[in-house]
Length: 111
Image (cartoon, rainbow, N blue to C red; front, side, top):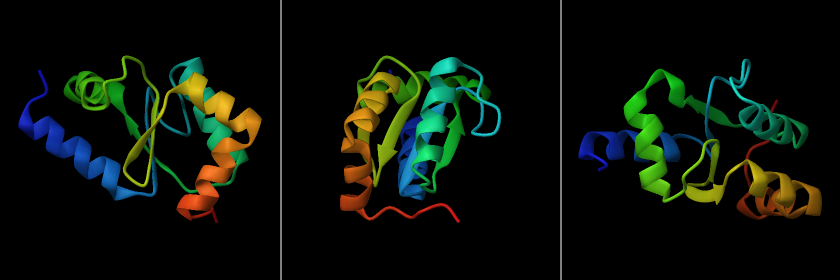
């Protein structure tokens, strides 16, 4: 069960940036192939994003799954809204839908 402190931390992370990726490892050093794929997609689209390493905090690792009602990591949030995991990101990227979403939400580009 998601405790209140963990839920508050997740809410704070989700609202801290336009794009937040909960992942295994960091954007510089992903610790799984799915997280690496998500980072590659976001980097290719040249958007500014923050990442949260779920491996460094077991309560966040389990809590984010409950928070989103999504069983896997990575998880992408755009402007506070859950978008999906790696497979959804890949599909949205391939169809151009992810770039359109970023444009519609007016997310910041990486500098």
